[in-house]
Length: 231
Image 1 (cartoon, rainbow, N blue to C red):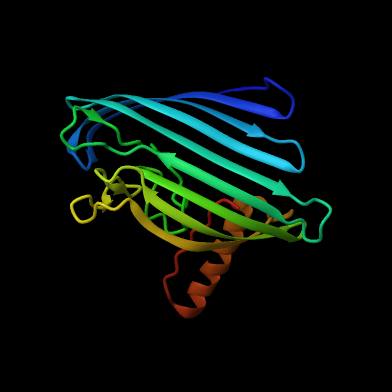
Image 2 (cartoon, one colour):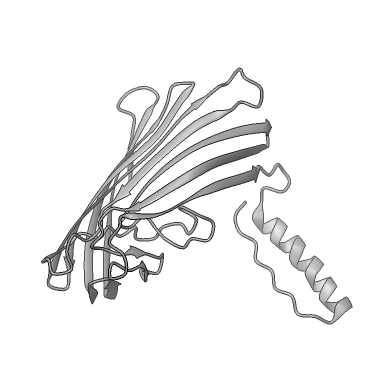
């Protein structure tokens, strides 16, 4: 990854990712996958505007097929800095290519490689593969340490000949059962609390909670498990 600053208030990330794996699975079958990913991310903004845009091209081979896939993502917002609660109007638009034909000699399915689970939803059911989505939203900041957002997500398949894939590359929406591009739409809300010292160190928090649960196990004679992620 190479960050550069071509103009003030704009940052550009240029990157390359290579993936070589055996027994990869897509809706056209299983085969050896060799995929080269070249991408660019442009982000920044001049108040009250902010933006985050990304373009990705993928090439390579999947068994005897060639790979030619792409993705584009955009996140643009306008913040009313002088208004109460500092509201931000946001608009996200994403599109990732899908396979055009199961009999083609080219695999057009975009591979998100190692996507975060909650790209579209906290459940992480689908990833940015053979999908288009539009997401208008509004966010407010009741305090300096909290923010709340509410939006509505519209999802379509980019190609009706391809499947929507889960993060484990299993078909989540098969082309054999429906040829319509529309997948679904739903509302999405989120609340976030920014941790302040001394709680920003996740390792200290994990150690504290493990001691507390260990003490609780001794008192109740039960087995408890704890997992703490990054704050």
